[in-house]
Image (cartoon, rainbow, N blue to C red; front, side):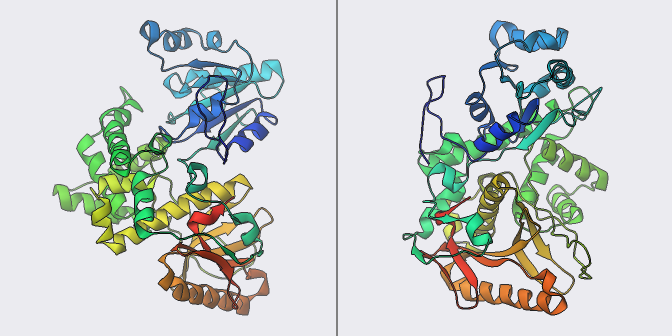
Amino acid sequence: MSTFFPRNGKEYIPRIIDATIADFLATFGAVCVEGPKWCGKTWASLNQAHSAVMIGDPANNFQNRELAKMNPGLILEGAVPRLIDEWQEVPSIWDAVRFEVDNRGTKGQFLLTGSATPNRKGVLHSGAGRIATLRMRPMSLYESGDSNGVVSLLEICNGSADSIGTGNVELQQLIDLIVRGGWPESTGLPVERAAQIAKSYIKTVIAEDVNRIDEGVVNRSQEKMELLLRSLARNESTTASGAVLRSDMEGIDRETLYEHTVADYLDVFRRLFLVDDQPPFSWKLRSSIRLKQSAKRHLADPSLAVALLKATPKKLLNDLNTLGFLFEAMVERDLRIYCESWGGELYHYQDYKNREVDAVIEMPDGGWCAIEIKLGANQIEEAAANLTKLRDALVRESTDLAPKSLIVVCGLSHAAYQRPDGVIIVPITALKP
């Protein structure tokens, strides 16, 4: 992807979500871009804003924040779209924006960014129909320049596949990408330095953000928060239940925890956009297939799991099982970013006949494609067999259930191609939306 310079003179790396933000600004009075800290929300929004106010700016003893608390309307005046960064620090801004959108009656008035969600966004009104919400994630490999983008996910989901060489990929390269993560500040850094960003992220969340989100209302244990994060890292890319997470925490801490305590902590992590679980695929209309309704656990970026597990590139090279789960997390992060840009949704599949598929993309037209994720090229045959077995079983029940395409996303492959059985093989380092 090309690089250009926005109005503030700093280099901006285009993001896939840019087009969606522009489209939403043309459709709604205001757009709220939410996501984890440091994922690039502010820069992406500044790139489309004509004026901005930073609520967290410490200048003049946090003057912007104090003004917003006294009268939120004071910070809304300015060229539109007007960016209000970290609006959640003064939750009443939400209602002020909704009111002003109604008052002006025109589109594209405000851009809000937030790295946390208050318990109640709107005291008076939800903002439905006035304020559209978008979820932004850390950078995909295509955005960071680590995928050459010679294969379109949309095209292969629609069954179109040309054979093409995609270049050699080394295992160490994939490990480094996982450890580095998708944080914009990490791009271009040596992997050892990039790893410090994820470690710092965890420390900041635990020491500051967790208790700030409900400041003065709930006092949560930082130690237990860290235990839960470590359990989430250990169970990355699995469907571990809340009971499993609680058992992990009790095993380490040797203290009995209540189920509602773990549920409350998980809710906090969701509101901080620290977790990004992958929901189960649900059949529409008349299917009689019974599906397990467990979400697949994901942290916002695989680099966070690496930091919590205290893993290093060398340790991961010697633990291919753990590496496989982290590779799956990186791929599913990218698949979600890619498919959401054209209206798709990412799920996983698991039923009571022990049939599983790593990822399912539901297309805007209601069709779907099944995806297996494998680190090594030597696993392609097994993955393809699993996909064709599932396809054949579903077709026997009803041709309406047939997937539009079967895909294996691989790490160590140097080509994209379609097999005689119809399964499409593509390296993650060749994908784009």
